[in-house]
Length: 238
Ligand code: OAD
Image (cartoon, rainbow, N blue to C red; front, top):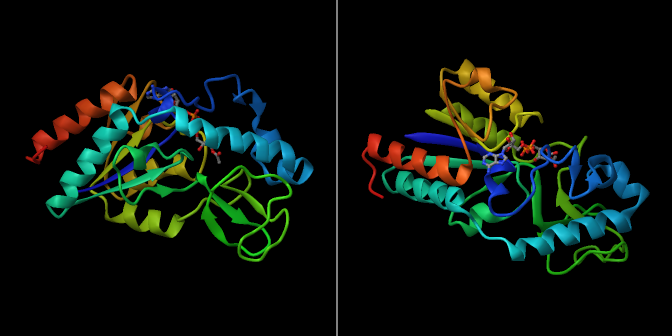
């Protein structure tokens, strides 16, 4: 069986990371336009770098919750019997990896990564960034920026994502409001291909009518139950 899972901020909420749309449109007390757009970075690079330094630093204070761990266990079990679980996340945290998942596709980038606007080099963040930070590849000062897909920018890995979706037997959306495209459109693409669709979320998402099945509640509870039920149904060893 090939399972395609899309996750959003809701899966990390019980780990202590705030979602985007549950806080009056503010992300950690900032308007998205002030910290998550290329224009904001051009206007005030120090503010934007500081914002992402804080988000990156906060990762050390949180841990994966049972939803991250259950997905990783399902991925391992499916892989062991010749199946697959493609894990695509809109999240920029690293909790899927820390929960044991492999090959996580971060379509909106990663807090733990940096890239250089001058030469395009990508690398693992070793320390906080400032407007004076220098690119290790081309030495440009001020070149490094958070490796985050900001509003108005193209999400990463779309070819790989579309190929995995086309091969999937089951599409599962977890902890996302379905407000931001292209991720919000994956469920319709899955349906058009006749792929079964399941939503696991705190509440019905914007695209809830496109799902064949839904389980509403906190991800830390509903995801492990769904994983256990699926593993029993397809006779996978835990
Ligand atoms: P949102 O904040 O839009 O939605 C989070 C969803 O998670 C909501 O539907 C909540 O009801 C649900 N939720 C909250 N707590 C939950 C819990 N404990 N268990 C399960 N569900 C829970 O976040 P995303 O859909 O991820 O993009 O947002 C998508 C994109 O918009 C983000 O990746 C980001 C943002 O702007 C970029 O930065 C480009």
